[in-house]
Image (spheres, rainbow, N blue to C red):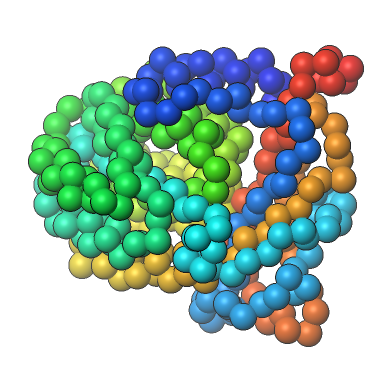
Length: 314
C-alpha cells in the first residue's frame, strides 16, 4: 500500500492550515536511516497483561523479513527519564457530548493526573472549531481549568482535530500516546476520512479511543464504532465503548496498566530505500518463555523515509 510523498505532503499542508503554532513545522520524513520504534502489548489467553518478557522472546518482521531488535525496554514509565512520553488528549466538546460532559471530564482529569511520568500533555478540544494547547506537568492546573470551563456546543470536527494533533506530534521525539474521547461522528471537518487514516498510519502515535455512543442514532452507531476501532487498531492501541459512565474509571485503570506494561522495540530496517512506501510490521512471540495462545498488539506498519530522487527511480 504505497503512499507517494506528494500525497502525504498535501495532507500535511492541510494540517498546517488548521493547526495553531504549538511548535515549528518539521518534515514528515528524513532521508537518513532511523530507528523504527514499535510499541507492543502482550496479553495471555485470559486477557491478562504479560509483563516479564525479554528481547529474545520477540521476533519482528518487516514485509515478511526478520529484523534485528536493537532497542528493547519494558514499561513507558520505566523508560520515561531516557525516552520522554508525550501524552495527547482529543476531547469532543460538540453539542452531542453535552449530556454527560461533567462526569466525563472529571474521570478524564483523574486519569491524566495518574500519568505523572508524561513529559507533557497536548490537549485538543474540538466542536465546530479546533483548539490546541500543550501543558507541562507544572501547568496541569491550567489544563484542568481549560477542560472544566469548556462547554459542549456546536458541530463535530473530529478529522480536523486528529490532523492538528498528528501534525504537532510528528515534531515530538519519544513515545506518543493519544486518548480520544468522542462519539465518533464527524459533521464539520475539511479533512476526509481516508486522509485522516493516512496520517494515522504515517505517525508513531498509539491511540486509545473511548466512544460514547448512546446518544447516537442507531443507524450510524455501528459505522462510527467500526471507524474508531480501526483508528486504534492500526496503531496497536485499543477502543472502548462503555454502555454506562460507571465503566469509565475501570477503563482508565486498564489503559494505565497497559502503558505500565507496554514493551518498546526498535529496529533499523534492512530495506534502506527511502521510497516512501508502506511497510508491514509483524511482531511474534518466540522461545520457551512466551505464553501460548497469547495476543500481541502492535502497529501494523509504517511509511518508509521518503526522498524525491529515490522515489522517482521507482
